[in-house]
Image (tube, rainbow, N blue to C red; front, side):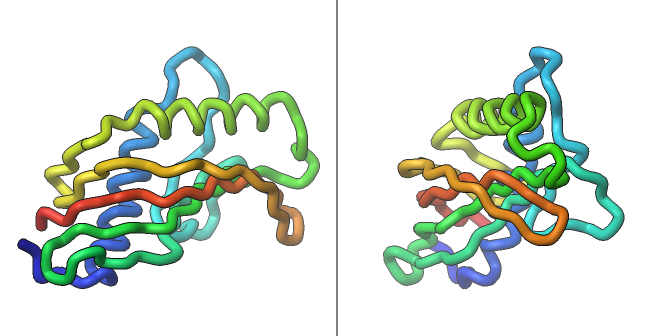
Length: 145
């Protein structure tokens, strides 16, 4: 059983998912983001980069450590790269990396088990000069910390 709150597990799950994407990124020589960040982007990071963010989390059975999380993974590029072949290949690689993460997968360092991923939706977003693709899905996770 876990006595952790959802605010305790959010940053650990973001970190575990970012590390999992990094580890499972295809090694076929295709384009890679400059960084994959959990939660938010550190200042000074050049495009393209990826951000893993948990927008909402709900404990399914209080005190048992089972959670449902609403997750967004944003692949950010400069607006001039919108629709470019390189950006499209990076998004395709991101999808492959997400599918390649073992489920259930134990992340001993962060104490999080990814039990499964729901339907992944894909949309586009922009803000100023930044533009990106957003993958959004629900994930079932278990807190083992």
